[in-house]
Image (cartoon, rainbow, N blue to C red):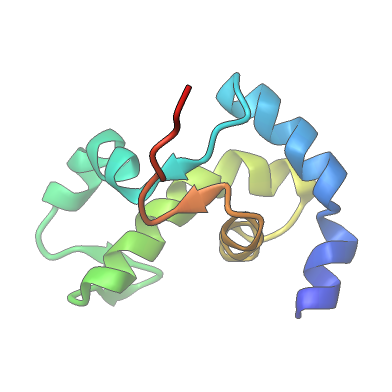
Length: 101
């Protein structure tokens, strides 16, 4: 799976697409995505992929995949594959680390 992800979504192309998609090269934290997709989380019961999501990690993965959907379609891969690749490249993180400048 890792090899296929690297083959279909090369690091260099992902970084270039990310810079266009985000207008910067900064990682995005799950807290930012929760705010951006708060309307998605407000739906009760929370459904994703035809299942009711009750676990917090399932909800977070669903939010991340919604966020990844435009990039996934650009690379012609699933939102789940794009989410995994972006997490491995640390473009989607649990929380941003403090920066000095």
